[in-house]
Image (cartoon, rainbow, N blue to C red; front, top):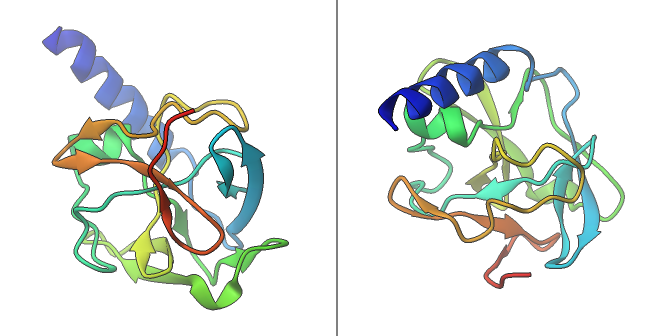
Length: 144
């Protein structure tokens, strides 16, 4: 089991380095069984992690391997229905910029590979549950 977890961490870490960041990171909305939620420009679900300290991420190492941060190298762009005033960035320990919404850092879940998947919803890992986020910047605490 430890070997499998180590392999997942290595693969996910490689995926993070392979380009989750771009100069014009878009945050969009998508209708799902959980409601209308935040997604990236490809329709991949974005999550909030309540243990974060305001805009400061506490998700690093193995956590960030399974829950990669939404990174950008410029100002994030709001898609239709996304409130531009709620979009921002925060600097991670490694100096990279993570996109925030409503003052909370945003993350992917490595098991969500197709648009609209929400397999990370309510998963309790690394000190707390992970939740999808509404256009209002609120966590959605229900399961589909």
